[in-house]
Image 1: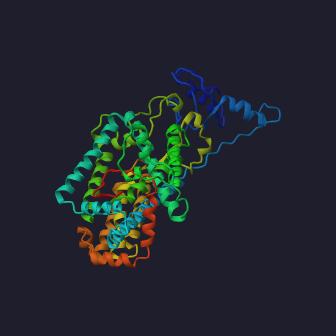
Image 2: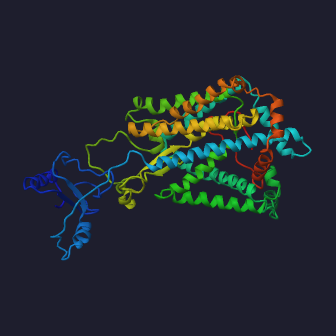
Amino acid sequence: MKNASFKRALQYEVDQLASRNASAAIILIDKGRKYVTKWADYLFSEFYDPDFNQSTKLPAFFMYTATFFNEMLQLSSDGSGRELLLQFYRPLNSRWDISMLIIWLIAVFCVTLGGYWAALRKIYEEIVTLRGPHQISTNVMQKSRSCLNDEQMTTSANCLFIIIIMLVVVGVLMLGFYFRGVMVFIFNILLAIIGTFSIHRCLTALFGSICKCGHCRVCISMNDITQSIFRRDLFNYECCTERPLVMSVVVFIGAASFCVTWFTIRRDPYAFVLLDIINITVCIHILKGIRFPNLMWLTVLLTCMFMYDIFMVFITPFLTKNGCSVMIEVAAGTDCSKTNGGYPIAPINTEIPEKFPMLFQVPRLSDPMISCIDLAIEKEFHPVILGLGDIIVPGYLICFCFTVDFVVRTRYLYGFISVSGYGIGLIVTFVALTLMETAQPALIYLIPFTLGPIIILALIRREFKVLWIGDFPKSENSSHISRNSAADTASSAVNSGSIGFDEVSVTLPAVLPCNTG
């Protein structure tokens, strides 16, 4: 039965077939042909015909005309299809998707590695303090002293810092809401730049820890180049005056090429693979360079982010004209105000808004219809997404916990509990997402499940006051570092990152205190 070109005709023909005791109806559509609508007809995942009564007892199936005649009928011996028996079956959709497990593994990996790396950097700074300036470079000593000074910030300065951070976060979100296209493009460029340095730092640290080779340096430094062109040193930094290592240069070029490739093909349906890799390194790079002085300011910041997430997801729909959540509309670009009364428009006939790049995206791999998706029409998969903020913000606390483990000699107890709480909180987030069938503000689950167990554990161990004010006994620090077998590992891991290009310190929402370089 060909799809008719006037309203209600489809329902009429289906009713006629039902009156003749037909077992099913196959509705043929000419792919890409325009009927009464202003756009071409396609079959896609969100397709439906608003003029067709879904309660009709006669099963109806839509199919392309070319597929029916060129493929289905050709299965018969004479090509007429007379002896064919067609049975249609669609597997039931599972409420749980393996993409949730993949995102869970990515998130837990990022916070665990970032937290452990942050603790190693803390150990290295303690080594600097113990060994003195004779064995450690002046640059490293200056960074260590700068960090110690930052940790002694006054209460008013910390309060002001948190207020400024929250204003920046809200301001960026509002700009994304009113000027979304411009902000998406800006953040795409920023992610390509930050991602280049993040991949470079992570890979150089990895190669430096597993391989002691590659210490050959190139024959020229950055300042040598500027001196030959501009007759002066434009960059008065150690990274520019020293000749970089060959391995560092090669890794940097590879990282830059990787990010430029993603930026170029970012609208491709499979570009999410490159984006997820970039975002993994960005999360780890940010977390390993962040340090909070105590649990008190962490709690204040996490509480602010908790309230911020609730307001932007659940309260803003009552304030916007279209009833949409500001957070969801900015992140995904979806318009929740669309009604189901009109004809559906295929993605190929419209402009799909580009998602913000600060998201982990994994397609719903368990969807039984994923093999039927025509990417030429759909333009993208239907993914499960998780924002970078849902990893970085709780990751601040996890980094603090790993650092505390090295300081008070608890053998990763606080770190393990915080990571476990984060993992459970993310599982609860996915459960809420599945049961409520609507986007969830992940921080309202992640923050309580991560912060609560740490506070309870600290109270049980009678260390809450120490963690709350950050008053760690110096003697314990020194004793622990001198005995800790990970000290040499920390020194190697930190030094391996400083082999040619100085890292870019990135300040994201909730960066309190010390962002070491």
